[in-house]
Length: 75
Image (cartoon, rainbow, N blue to C red; front, side):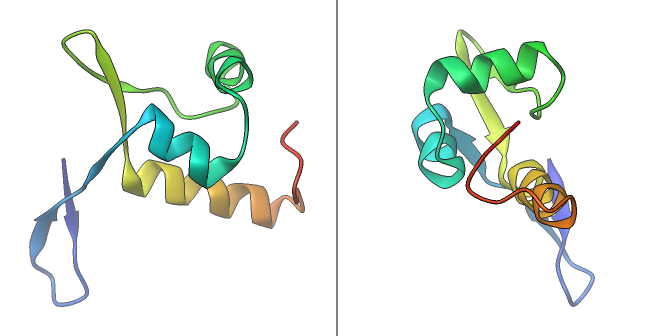
């Protein structure tokens, strides 16, 4: 996946592992997977048997929580 930088160059969008995502979002693994199943959290990109999330998708998810007024608690 590519994202566009401020000077209009395409750069790779880093992929985050589950532990990295959980440390950013601050929820338990079971809560994260339940949120994905319910369509509340961004789905993973599969690479073999492992799951990853584009950094931009997690940033957008966090921004959507902020704009919705959710703080310190994911519903």
